[in-house]
Length: 120
Image (cartoon, rainbow, N blue to C red; front, side, top):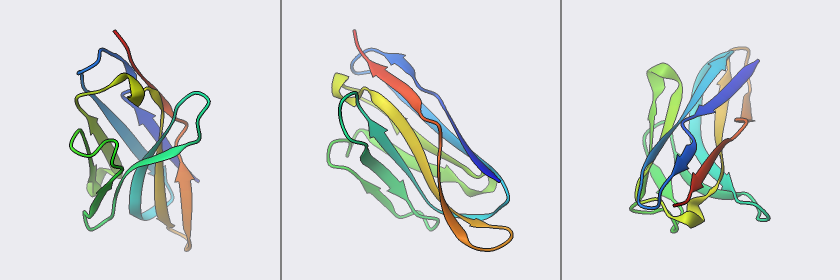
């Protein structure tokens, strides 16, 4: 019905940058809020950033000033630009989207996750 596919993860040295993408496809009428979460080994999943359809941005304190969330509504794609990466940013990053469906209703969807490893 609807799929979210993340890409852009990988291994990067401390201080480096990565850009994650989240492409939504399927029976989409519109996408409301999009967000990114992450889960480090042995820890609970935590919220990282969110962007509304209108462009309002919110960030977790741990990433504020280093990460930038954005979206391209025409492409149904969200992005997370991550700069000044630290080892503690190492985690599986998940995309989340609240999607209004073509046949009606609004549902919450998750991507499969993409690994980000920050290490020298």
